Every structure is written in C-alpha cells, then in structure tokens.
Length: 153
Image (cartoon, rainbow, N blue to C red):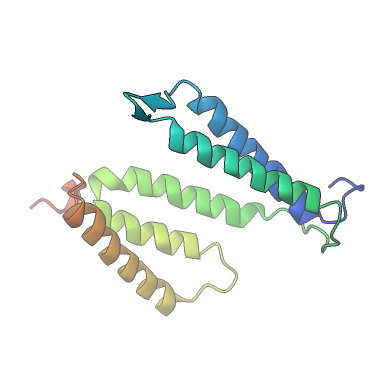
C-alpha cells in the first residue's frame, strides 16, 4: 500500500477499475463503433469500459482526499476457494450437467466465507439453480444440459 494515499481501499479499487477499463478499451478497439448507419458491435463495450475507467479515476482521486481504514492482509484462502469453485463448475458442466455444477459452485463459493452455514447455503444453491435453469435453459433456450452424461441410464 502506498503511504501517500489516505484510503488504501479506494486507491486499489481505482487501480483495478482503471486496469480493467483500459483492458476493455484495448480489446474492443478492433470492433466497429458504427455499422450501416447504426451502432456497431464495439459501441456498448467501449462506452462501458470508458465508464469503468472514469469510475476508477474517481475512486483513485478520492483515495487522496478522504481518510479510510487501513488495508487488511490479502485473504489468499477464500480467493483460492472461489477460484477453485469456478474451475470445478467448468469441469462439471459437461459430465454432471448445469444443475449439479451450479449447486457445487454455490456451495464451494460459500465455503470461502467465515460465516458459512449449511441450511442457508443449500437454500441459496437450490434457488439459484432453479432460477438459472429456468432463465438460461428454458426461457433463453441455451443448449446447456440440465443433467449431464453421468445421469444417462
């Protein structure tokens, strides 16, 4: 944490937003802003990335003006658990299916919290799974297997 900043949370938030926004602008520069007299495929991502940079700049500047709490240590274990849950979700999608992969994702992600409890986590997993299957599989018609090849009898 730099010692010249009064608020390390805003400082690093600003840096992160500026980095992601700049990356979005750089990756999206090959897409056309206009196409056939209308908005092209690069318009919305470029505008959103620019807004992200502006929000990052505001947070960065605010870090030098407003006092804030000191930054705590980096929580490597929870970050690792959340990253692992995303990877497991990707591996389970094809073989176990969308529903099982979502339940595992939510439960593993919740394990990263110090306030983990089974009943609320399982209720959240069931609700998220039902909502996501209804929206993505049935309403939008995405070709996602609700239950994968593990459940073919």
